[in-house]
Image (cartoon, rainbow, N blue to C red):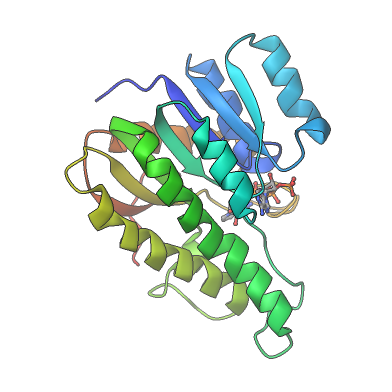
Length: 229
Ligand SMILES: NC(=O)c1ccc[n+]([C@@H]2O[C@H](COP(=O)([O-])OP(=O)(O)OC[C@H]3O[C@@H](n4cnc5c(N)ncnc54)[C@H](OP(=O)(O)O)[C@@H]3O)[C@@H](O)[C@H]2O)c1
């Protein structure tokens, strides 16, 4: 299994992303961590202070194409990219109540923006690396029992778009992962969620490490188990 030395985490100022940064640092991996507003990212800045020279905090709003261009122009080579940022969408969660603007915003952030960003990241990934996305089991069409239909659709769209990246990576020795982090106790997952940020992050990083060396595209959960598309 190739050893990874540098990981990029997009959406790293709180929740699962912040947990993944902590986990990589504990394993000796240097991190490039993005936040929409680095000045307000107190926990991330504290991690950078405690790990001198190992946390490079960059400003990035995935919705901003000009910012993506500027960000990737100065990005060094990386072994892992985890495009983790996402939103849950309007509270009512139904297609019938949603305005066109609400639907557009949700689909753009959860599906289109990660894919566009990833195309800019792909040239920076080293052979033996992993391009991973934080999707959700709620993006599985096969396992969809109904409910939360807009969020599910946004993650199903992300899953489909990530599959579209697969041919573009062929022959480069880079694994492609679409991942479910578990139901995690974050602002999005809520306080009653089943999995701690620490356990999710540990499992996500283990799963990413295990995928290195393959060229497959897989839909895996935080324990490394396969999810039906
Ligand atoms: N928690 C769960 O149970 C669960 C389950 C399945 C999947 N997920 C997925 O896991 C990922 C992380 O979730 P979480 O629970 O850690 O959520 P969270 O605590 O709400 O954090 C979301 C992160 O995404 C960032 N973000 C949102 N829109 C962005 C944009 N346009 N550009 C850049 N960053 C943006 C946020 O930045 P700001 O702080 O600036 O808003 C924040 O860093 C999401 O993709 C989510 O859909 C979560």
